[in-house]
Length: 78
Image 1 (cartoon, rainbow, N blue to C red):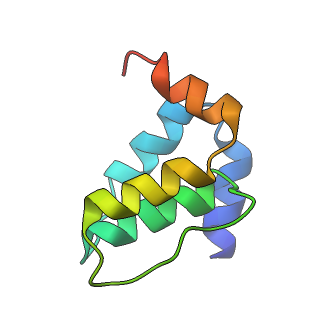
Image 2 (cartoon, one colour):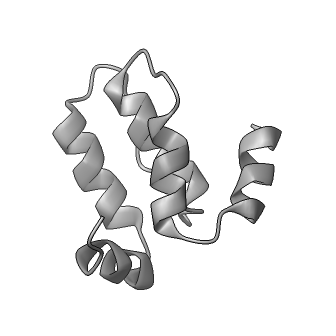
């Protein structure tokens, strides 16, 4: 986890975060959502349940994001 946190310092944009996550292999799609929540420094992390539907996991992540990150996602073209 320290490597992930260290990588966050080098990441300057949401697009770079998504690119870094996409090159990794996850055994469960929910793991990818959890990783994104961690890298985006959510104040509270969404509930993690390995059996959770990935759509539910994404919804929980969006609820945990700050307004500025939500706006970045909404108005991004990547």
